[in-house]
Image 1 (cartoon, rainbow, N blue to C red):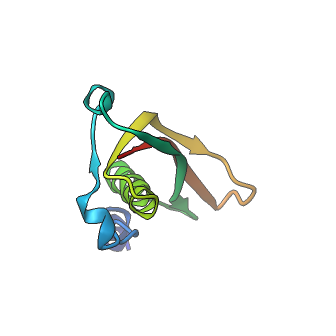
Image 2 (cartoon, one colour):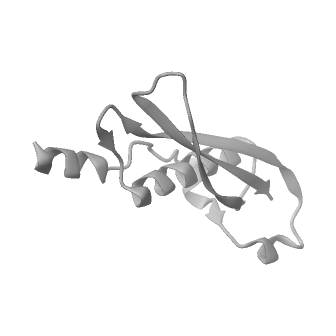
Length: 105
């Protein structure tokens, strides 16, 4: 049982879209000459029941969702605004992480 939980908790659950493969995560200083397209808030589940996902996998999923969103809006770069924050939910068996992202082109 422990081996199964470890292997599941380390998996990423979000698939990148074909279009998002060209979107990159950059630092704020790298977008000074870019056009801001907007802001998006991304959320992914990090705990279901007793299973808590690996922090690296959760962060990768947050970035993938942000890249997917940026690609839909014609963006080619994203900048994270702060660190992922735990977002409590009504169901105590599921909790999620939330991150704000700026979209640029």
